[in-house]
Image (cartoon, rainbow, N blue to C red; front, side, top):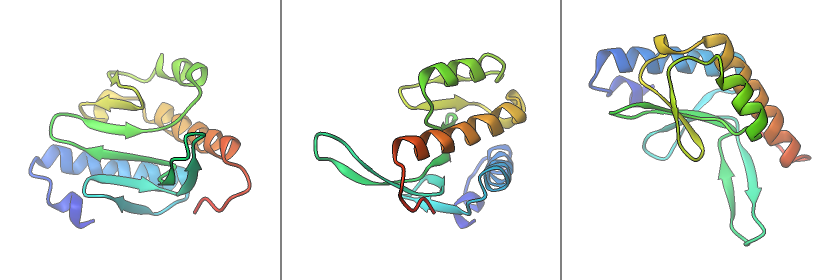
Length: 130
């Protein structure tokens, strides 16, 4: 991916390519750019009671300068259970932040991705998610 090739930090670039492989293999969805810096996998249409709606990747990540942001959506109970053994990370409202792939357990990441896909399908059933 051209976006990844342009990452100035060699280790972060290498981690981004690793994550593309992990996300693609685990989700079965091809990588697609969402905006200038998010690499997403799969797609779903959301709509909120406020009337706001749009399309979003089911899962994704962004190799930002400071940290790598992982975008996974899980119920809070599922997320907390899996994150116990995930490795070194911090969290934000809807993101998990890591410094590098070597800091985390890849098998737990794969479980997070699979559960995130299941969760999205549960919340937004009966729609094309590719």
